[in-house]
Structures are given as structure tokens and as C-alpha cells.
Amino acid sequence: MLKCLFVFFSCAMMAAPKILVIGGGPAGLGAAIEARLSGADVAVVEKRDVYTRQNTLFLYTSTLELLERWGVHVPLMQELYFQGERRGYVLIKDLENALSQKLADLGVVQMRGECHRVQGQQAWIQTSEGELRIPYDLLVAADGAHSHLREQLGIPSIHYGEALAGVVMIPAVHKEGLISVQILNHPQVYIKKVMIPSATVFFFQTRPDAAGGPIGLHECVQFAEDMGLEEAELMKSHCLFCLDNVPIDVQKMERFADPMQNMIFLGDAAATSSFYLGTGANYAFKMTQVAKTLFQHFSQEGAFAQFDEEMRPVCEELVQLSVPLFCNHRK
Ligand SMILES: Cc1cc2nc3c(=O)[nH]c(=O)nc-3n(C[C@H](O)[C@H](O)[C@H](O)COP(=O)(O)OP(=O)(O)OC[C@H]3O[C@@H](n4cnc5c(N)ncnc54)[C@H](O)[C@@H]3O)c2cc1C
Image (cartoon, rainbow, N blue to C red; front, side):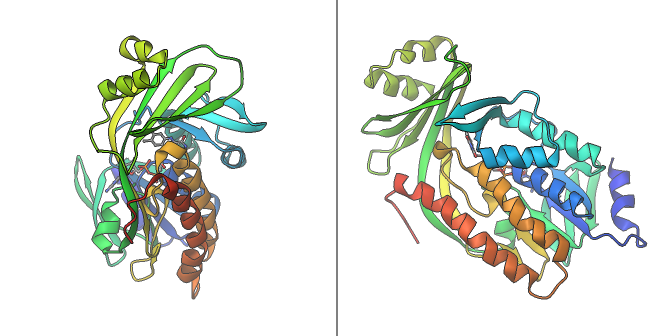
């Protein structure tokens, strides 16, 4: 695989632009598909060996339509309806595996390694077989909410608030094909109860005006008991999945491109939402559509400035959705 990547990126005769994507989450994988479809030679670098994350994602109709346009079939995704609109419900690992399969079908190189430095249009990748230095024409940084590349470039972010969050998913059998959402009013945490045919999912997020503290399974059970929820008992015994004490930092980069390094930022690296709202992955896919134009024209004068301009409203909308959940804004 590594040898293949070297050949792929070092062939001087190739005319197609070489786009290197760092991060194989929804943003990176989606961007890689779009870049490949635009005719570029594409490689994706992901530091994890396998996709195992079990977070549940609710996908908007627009995201489902994009997956269809790309020809990405997610075998384990459930299609449901919320207020008359189509929604996808999927574990993130199943979505990532399906996107990765599509990339393999498109002949995109996917390698395991960690990018730790970018300079002079080259990326330094640490792999299990040693360090690689990969030249690129355009680099897509999609390395997530705690983006190392964002830090390395020193591009400042605007921070909107911080919180701790937890998710508890309980297997269940409900009315077929529908999603129902209930917001519960607890003094310490925002609680959202989402019922889908195969599960009840509880999202917890600390309120900025309440005393902080951990949100582990124990606390989630306590919050459920405070609200008199019958699921509190089930949470103790049949909890299929619990994600606890997830730090949330809602932020937006001050600019989304670095023309000096021929780099752009996408997904959670560019702007992070509170996952309580179920928006981040959907916006990551939206951002791939902003990048689509750039993939075709990034060598043209002003292309990065235009990309930046088009990313602004998308990222602003994303963070503004989360802002009402925080009152501890810092600009
Ligand atoms: C519990 C939970 C529920 C959620 N529910 C929803 C929902 O219902 N709907 C929704 O739209 N969103 C939801 N989200 C948010 C969504 O998961 C994120 O917004 C989305 O995953 C962002 O995609 P991304 O590709 O930008 O980042 P990530 O998914 O974080 O992917 C980044 C990738 O980059 C890799 N990486 C990082 N650094 C490097 C490096 N230096 N070199 C190589 N690889 C690197 C990481 O291993 C990772 O695979 C939820 C999140 C959580 C935690």
C-alpha cells in the first residue's frame, strides 16, 4: 500500500492534480470522493487502523441525496422519517466503511499513518513502516475537532463555548419508520430523547449556567431518574452503548484556507458544533460541496479566497445553531 502511494504521488508525467486528504472521517472521505470525481489523483491518510466508532449519526435528506449521487450505499443505514422528511440513521463506523469502499472502487489510495507536519507543499506522515514525505498540489485538512494541522498553521479560531456531553443508546422496538424527538427540561443538563425503531437514544449536555461535573453513565442514570424516566432502570442493565464525558468546544476558524501551503480545512477542523444537535457530519458533507469547485480550479488566481468566502456562511450557520446552548461565549 505504501509503495503504491509513492508511485502514485511521484510520477512526474501525470497531469492530474495531486490532492492529499488528511483524516478519514466523514469530511475527509467525502472530500476525497468529490476530488476523485473531479479528475484528481487522490490519496487519503488516516491514523486509525480500522473504523470502530459507534456514535450514532442522523443524516439529513440533503446528505442522503449526496450519498446517492456519489453511489455510496451504506448497508447498515436505516432510512426513517422525521416530520415528513427522510432521515438516515447510521453508526459512524458503518458510514465510514461505506465511504471507504467507494474510494477503493474509485481507485483512491487509502493509507494508515499520522500527518504531523506540513511545509513547502509536502506532508510528513508517520507510518508503521517509518516516515514518509509526500508532495501534493492541494492538501485537504480534515483531521477533526482537535485538528493538529490547524494548530501547526497557527490559524486562530473563534470559540463560542464549552460543555461536557454524554450519549446513552438503549435497544428498543418502536413504531416502524419514524423518529420522534423530545426535549426534557433538567436544571443541570440539556436532555434530548430520540426514539427510532430500533433504539431510544439519550443525549446529555451540560448547561453553561449549572455547576459542571462529569457526565458518565452513573450521572446519566441519575439525570434520567430525576426526570422520572422509566428508561433509567434499562440504562443500568441493558445499555448497548454509552459515550461519556465528551468535551465539546464549539469553534470556528478565522479562515479556512492557507494559499501559501495550498491547504484547505473541512469538517470539524473548520468549524465544530455541539453534537447534541446532530449537525456536524451533515455540515461536513455540505463543506465538501464548497470544496468541489476548488478541486477543479485551485490553481486559478483567487481560488482560495473564493473558497474561504463560500465556507464562511456554511460555518457561521453551523456554529450559530449551537450558540443558544451556551452562554459562556468568548470571542
Ligand atoms: C455521539 C456523537 C453523535 C453525533 N451525532 C451526529 C448526528 O446525529 N448528526 C451529525 O451530523 N453529526 C453528529 N455528530 C458529529 C459528527 O460525528 C462530526 O461532526 C463528524 O464526525 C465530523 O467529521 P470530520 O471528518 O470533520 O471529523 P472526524 O469524524 O473527527 O474525523 C477526523 C479523522 O481524522 C483522523 N485524524 C486526526 N488527526 C490526524 C492526523 N494527524 N493524521 C491522520 N489522520 C488524522 C481521525 O482519526 C479521524 O478519523 C455526532 C458526534 C458524536 C460524538
